[in-house]
Length: 448
Image 1 (spheres, one colour):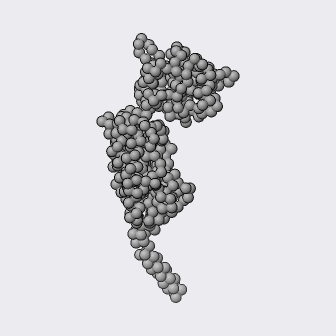
Image 2: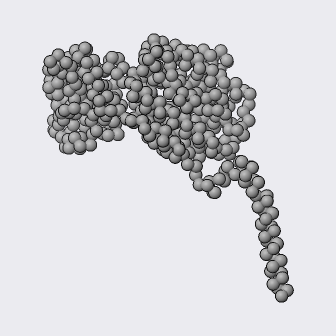
Image 3: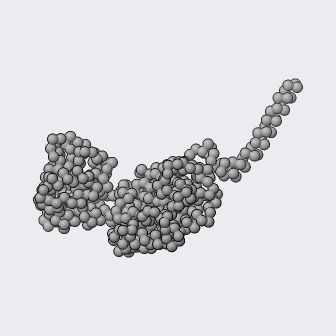
């Protein structure tokens, strides 16, 4: 009887202690956000970003008819320049003209070439499309390349043959002329040299501006794709920020960003994440710093949808952050510089003038020595492509051009701030941010 009483008393005591523990622990978990926030994955698992999947789900890729229009536009440009052909290796330009990317066919020492020649049929200019392929790879080329073109001719070259002689033979079939042969700017030199040797009567030259602009100036369909992929990249940054806390590491945030972009069906999505003084090195320094209360965090994120890229940067603070007035002054200086560049970016403007608009404002505020890179770059089927917003560039901005606008101030050992939004030039000649549909550029470090 006595033993039972002691056992009963001991059990009651344990229950009372556990109750006291709950009284203390539950408020800590519920109201002490840093403790709860750091431990929430134990209770809830890693954060889910599946809500992002629907954002671009109904945005279609480039249609077959648009690829045909591009090929015809290329043929007209070649004809007007009295050129025999345009030749490219698998990459962004072949993706633009024929839906063949560098991932569809990896480059090697054996050339596989897209050859487009203009052909006149009853006064109409049409595009003749050939693929020059190693003979032993011809079956793979025919069945695996997702070529968006009609009546494609596969010209095969044997291992002991000259591939460039075979490529030149397709020119005569297409145009019958000895005009210039234009090669894409990314074609490797040994291939351009081989073509020049095989076509001694023709000049082999890099494609001129009139051809490059077919890709530089985006169509309405391309802009729709780029709008959505940039929107969802910004939404991913905002979503990840909601799961951050003081004490989190750069690598943890980077992994969350990759998860968020993957959930959004953004291909190759990733993010450079830098805290505090680490952000003073624009491309990072390789550390894995924790976020302190006095830090801002820099995100530089992107990926692709249907081949078209996003590029968004934010320098953010958390609700619990305490940012110094000096660092806030830098943030708002960058913010104002971005606005100044946006106003300057219009159809007909010179690219260096847009760079100068942002640079002048940053210099006026006393930070001119710390804006160390160009204002921006073209964007589309490549994350960085021509034309560029930089000093020394005399390119003329035109309707359909798309750029990044990314001023920054970087004071080594102290702080780095970059704000980046991509934009395009609309039909009335003004600049429009791709992210306007989801709130556009940042408002403050706390409202990215």
